[in-house]
Length: 315
Image (cartoon, rainbow, N blue to C red; front, side):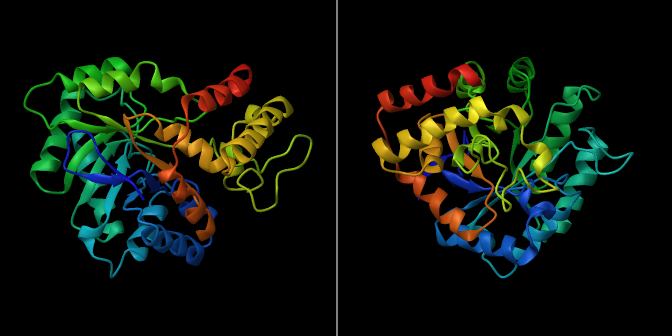
């Protein structure tokens, strides 16, 4: 495993991290999910990412159980706030940040998280109020650092230029060969502010594993065929033209790079210095093993450029 600094923090995070969005909020049987967490530690993964809204607490509760008995200083725990936890509980107000952080800590069975992230931008709450609440959470020791996910560029800039508040150290955008857009503006601007990326869906909801074939139904054990997870896979990514392009990517990865498509796609994401970690969503321990190996892979830009050309017309 390789490690990179997370923004202007003292955290060294594994370049492959383990997420829990659809998988550990109910999509995967509990014992199997816990096995994936423990296998991640075996592979040197030290960053675990979750959110209060994943299964409305289910993913955090599972991680809280899986992490019992493990040295708290040996891993980095990240969660998020914003999504609706009830009809009345959502957003980034002062009251919600305080309430939801306490609830997350209780489910995670810990006194603090290493990274507390704003899951989206809250248009209904003044940014000053959000930043003051986050700063107070840092001062109280309930979180060591703060980050954001999918914030618009102007709000990132405004928050970074505020005085007297805790600084953001991380950004969590969607980023993959099929969704490269944050690299144009978000990445370079974040770098100006000492913010690095923890990217989600680097394998495009599993499409970049090559498991989905043109004209064939999704495999029974895949995310796309799951009742609880399938609706989150964009339909256009499962259409024949895209899957034919992905199959060309698979052949490029296997025949010229000598690795699996998933490993190649993760290596493409990690080619960017501003990316500190890529979050995988494993359903089986063996997936954790395969994906973790991508941390050590390096390929020439020419090979990556060819891969980009293959999928560019179908994004």
